[in-house]
Amino acid sequence: MLPFRQVDVFSATPWLGNPLAVVHDADDVSDEEMARFARWTNLSETTFLCAPTDDRADYRVRIWTTGGELPFAGHPTIGSAHAWLEAGGVPRGDVVVQECGAGLVDVRRSPGLGFAAPALRRSGPVEADLRSRVLTALGVDEPAVRNMAWIDNGPGWIGVDLGSADAVVDVVPDVAAFTDLKVTVLGRWDAGRAADLGADIEVRAFYADGRDFGEDPVTGSANAGLAQWLIGTGALPPSYTSRQGSVIGREGRVRIVSEGDEVWVHGDAVTRILGEVDL
Image 1 (cartoon, rainbow, N blue to C red):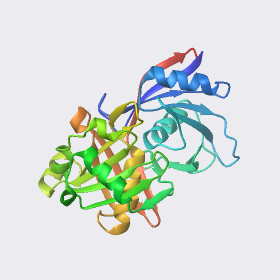
Image 2: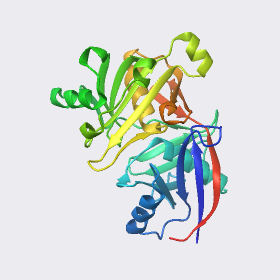
Image 3: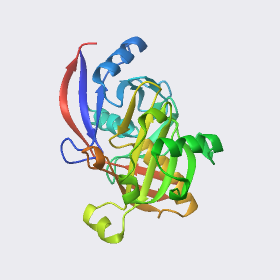
Image 4: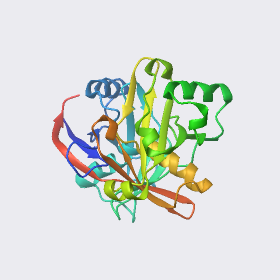
C-alpha cells in the first residue's frame, strides 16, 4: 500500500477546483501500473512522486493523463508540491525544485504555492490550415479572434484571444471537429464584473486525443502559456487573476505575476482525500 492524496487545486472552496490524484513513494511503480491507475481515476491528471534523478531537485514527478504521460502540466505541479510538502518533504533551498519530463521547475511557497512557467517549446503564429480547424472547432468566425498563437509548454496548447470574457463563456465547441486539438481561449471582464468576480479574465481549455473530448476545469499550463504570450505582447498586464471552470460548475482562480523574465502561476491547493492505495 502506498500513501495517497487527492488534492483540490486552484480553489480554496471545496470541490470547485481541479482534482489531482497523487501517489507517494512511487519509485517501484511500473509504467503500466501508472497508466492503468491514471485511467481508473479518470481525472485529467494523476501524478506519482519519486526520488529525484537530478541532484538539484527535491523530488521527481511522473504526470499521467488517461491517455499517456505528459512532460509538464500546471495543476499537477502545484498539487504535487503541496502533497510532497504536506507529507513532510523539506526543500533544500528557498523554493521547491520539481524534476519532471520538461526538466526542473521551481515552485515557491509564498505568496501561496506558485510555479515558474517553463519556457515555451513552441510559440508564434498558427499555420493557416490549422487556424481554420481551430476556428471550426470553437465555432467562432475569424473576425471574432483578436489573436491566435502557439503557446506549447508541454501539453501542446494553442492560445486564442477572443477579446471579451462574454465571448469566452459563449463558446460552444464542436466536439467532432476537435479530433486531436488542445485549445485554450481567454477574454477580459470589464472593471465592474472583475471586481464582483475577483477575476480579471475568463479562461477555458478544451482538449481531445482523437477518442475523448473534454473541457479542463482549471489549467495551470494553459494559463502559464497565455500569460507568457500576452504579457509579452502587452495585451495583458504584468499581474492579474483568471477565472476558469465556471461553465462546467467549477470556480477556479489562477493568480499570475510577471517578475522580470519570469511568469509565476499561483493557486490554492487543499487535500480533500487522504489514505492509501494498492497498485
